[in-house]
Image (tube, rainbow, N blue to C red; front, top):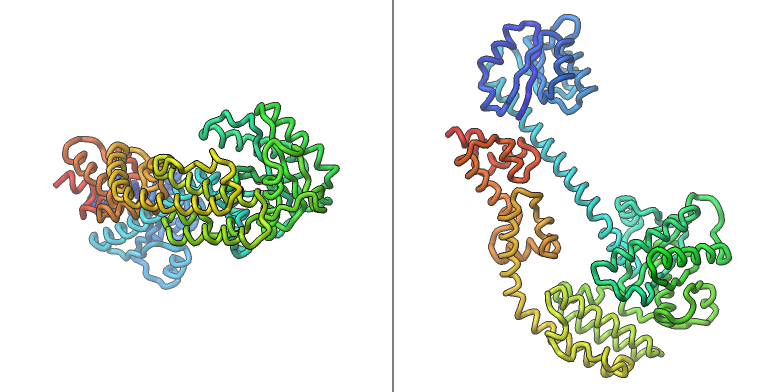
Length: 536
């Protein structure tokens, strides 16, 4: 509800307006009156006034001086001028002060109500926009870990953005690295002691490893940590501050050893780490990542040294070249996510074509198997299936290691499994969409008094909000956002008709935080305010 303050040294005018204007039609709860600028300021200090209507000509402090003082202290208050003086100089000062309207005496009730109503509409629009921005900021803050991880994934896989876009994302996601600066990478793999943890606990352990790294290196380095697409952790490090030389291997080795020791002490498990050379971030990140990944593939988990510096294998100790086609966007996972079956088949053919055209080792073939099988497992699990439910031989390469090192066998397996995935998932898509819509409607009906939005519903059914909206519109012909609003408005209509609850109580029960915004939505939907609907 709106509160308004009328200021005029001619008190009969403010009293007349307070008594004769049908304020409830304007949705105004309280009307205060003041006979001077000083009295108006005292009221403003005590009351949550939304709109100020002031005469210009008053003794001691005129209306323009009052408005100037009000806007300096309460910039969100809407100000209107009420005066019989039409001098152009006053009008110019009013414009500079961004006064909402300029009403001449004698006051016409209709014109006065129209001016106040316009100020109320402007206020409500401002409140709605502020609420929207606050919600966006809250959503972004809650999504920061996922946003950082997605950015890490895209950068290590070689996705290209303009420098300005990368700088904006780094700042927006509160990442402590800066584009164009020198950095180095630590590629970390968890030891076999962590195999006992389930899929829900493992991300927490990985996050703990990253936090330990931040603590160990905090005196000299800024750390950004995240998960890679290849079952490893990436720790990107840059110098703290702008001065100083880059730490050498001799200086870093004790710190990395301390990092390992603390992980072993606090998390009860070992890790292995590949430490790269310094590179320009993010320009050389993808190349550096692939080089470090090659070392990981060469040594495997639990084999070779626990700490390996790139300068040790740059001279030829490690010569594994990564299978570039696997990581070139669009990746197989991305193609399967969007059900681009023909493009996925072409991607697999390209992978094995690259294997035939290069001096591939058994590690390259195994690298291809890991990438392809990981994509298949991800898609099957996302659709609520196990791979062996689609084909009992789906994981045969794991049971028969010889096939993992035979490109022809692996190629046939990859294409056969792709065909079965396409057939199975295409047939189940229609039923799946119907089940999703039913679940969404159940959630909306049950949670309508909570923080219900397309995003919160999408989170509960484990789908991206855009994809869920597309499915819902395809199945029902109505957008999910419109459905949520419709259910809210129908419940509001019932509560207004069948209960004596106050408007602010109904607002809270429906999950809205702002009664003015709820009133605006209700009027937009039914053509009248909640009070008008209840009184009809």
